[in-house]
Amino acid sequence: MTAQAAGVSVAVSTVIFALRPSPHDGRMTVWLPLVRRIREPFDGRWALPGGPLEADEDLAASAARTLAETTLLTPQYLEQLYAFGNTDRSPGERVVSIVYWALVRSDEADVAVETENVRWFDADSVPELAFDHNLIVEYALWRLRNKLEYSHIASAFLGDTFTLSELREVHEAVLQKPLDPANFRRQIESSGQVVPTEHLKTGGRHRPARLYRYNTAEPDPSNGPLGTRQPSAPKDAS
Amino acid sequence: MTAQAAGVSVAVSTVIFALRPSPHDGRMTVWLPLVRRIREPFDGRWALPGGPLEADEDLAASAARTLAETTLLTPQYLEQLYAFGNTDRSPGERVVSIVYWALVRSDEADVAVETENVRWFDADSVPELAFDHNLIVEYALWRLRNKLEYSHIASAFLGDTFTLSELREVHEAVLQKPLDPANFRRQIESSGQVVPTEHLKTGGRHRPARLYRYNTAEPDPSNGPLGTRQPSAPKDAS
DNA sequence: TCAAAAGTGTTCGGGTTACACCCATGC
DNA sequence: GCATGGGTGTAACCCGAACACTTTTGA
Image (cartoon, rainbow over all chains, first blue to last red; front, side, top):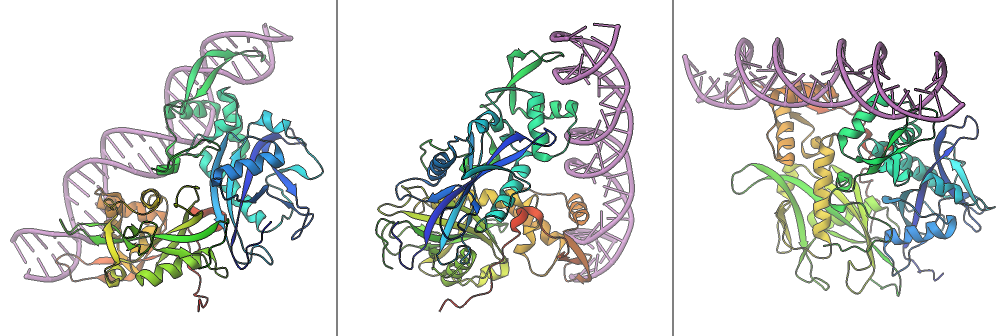
């Protein structure tokens, strides 16, 4: 912990989203894990997982590392959210936080153990957090809901294959409103974002549903020239 | 500048956009000012204006300051673009660059003097730049063109009042395609982004055009909970 | 046979696009 | 008058919302 006298230190934090059933009505809602701070400032407060940026690791790699260290999760999707660097955001020190946001599959989120210092919170009712983390969570949630409507990120909450009902359930959980199954089907199918597989999902007390797969041939243009940075994929910045 | 041994240093750079007539056909196109580096690494190469982040200034303030110091410009619009922090982006040192993008009025861009070390370039044909700045410019240009279609930023290129033809000219210059005057008028008017004034603009050899004003009552929702950060009042940088 | 979800068809209305047409000014 | 851009009208088209309807399974 070599404090850089009179300098600016850099930290990387991540807002991790997963879908979990609400304890009340059982409907799927957006949740995120927070960690309890164990030192000043804001000792005892809940905060986003993160830590100082190591000199020899990329930003996204730092996000993936600190995220895994505290929550044992490996995200399906990881993207930079924003850099927060106001002078007054951390009492007594100057910290610029590069914040990422991540999506993890629901089944993996269940594996993530809750401890004394790690707990899942409903994204729409988080307590008062350390630093400016409430604003960060709010912004990340806005980006998630916004980006869901023009991108493919919904499939990051699911496994390799999924039914259109499962995909629709993700959209409904994130957007917090019911969607017409018929129109949703046509929108998704015509977008080319997913492609049907040979298999069906049976077991429900109804007609089996076709399983779809994420279409890797149709790239996500939503990040422009930057593409979508994956956690550990080494890349060149040509 | 004392190098922080084994640490990560933070810099702030800005991609500044203005519309200028092309020297060839006279049509308006997107231009940006670059500064020539006068030390290693990349000595002699063109680069984005910027500099190290001071410990007592906010990120946007740093962007506005370094931008003014090198180009004498004061932007109408300033927004964070992205944080670039790959380990290999600057040879020999670890620099995280918080990059902003800015829009300046065309008439103000004309005031900006060109010197031996400051020059305007057509945004679509910049030379090979220092660091990863080519990627940054490409991304900023993508954001500009993208955001023009769902935001009000076009008026940042113009003065307080403007005709719809002038506003359309901005859109055409940025998007590089002609727009139907009739449909453009209706789209803009129905969006509530601008509001008509009492005044007309005469002088052309045709019917006078009504002057419009940016509608401050209709806030731009395009940045969500963060709002649009304006270059905060110049806190004395000594 | 029935319930429930999968999947298809069809109508309706708002918004965009293309383009014809009139208006007001300078020369 | 005439050229030029300002400004209005309108029909065609596209796309999403709403919803009726058929299909296929488990029980």
